Length: 220
Image 1: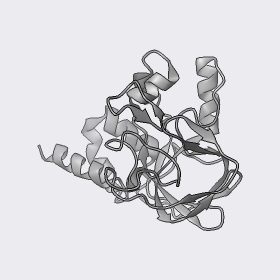
Image 2: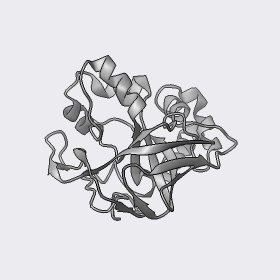
Image 3: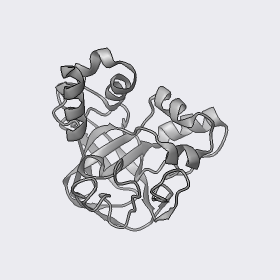
């Protein structure tokens, strides 16, 4: 269907976070030049948190877990933001594990499969909802609102087949579901178009807690 590469593989260590009461964050991810093991982290609050071994997540209430095991952001969107903001943006700045090239990240269909390297298989689940930690890291006014309105969110991914990943690995996109619900369409509906919420339920691969939330909202 399509293919690209892992342009940069980024891992975050624990550091002080003045933006949230949890006090620690792993958003400051930096490129690594060695392979990293990737495994399902388990439940969001009680599991291993990140899908990448050695990657730190501080706010485990809102980040990590099986449905947000890996975060990907496209270098093409970085270039757009660099022009928009008038500043250089290094891989990992947005807190992504995989900086990709040549892959439709915002245009990824929820539930499609990303075959990476020699055996790792990931599956897009939803876009990234910006938070106070992200705003503080960027140092841009109204960043949360601006990022959400632009709908260049990147994609969270769950792990279907564990494996290893390294910079330069090829990404092959396969098995795109017929429902056609993309990361960008789903995020736009969830954040800005409540009249179309039922459309999100077309994707069986939507994060489980989000599906439960939407079903409750629709039942009111």
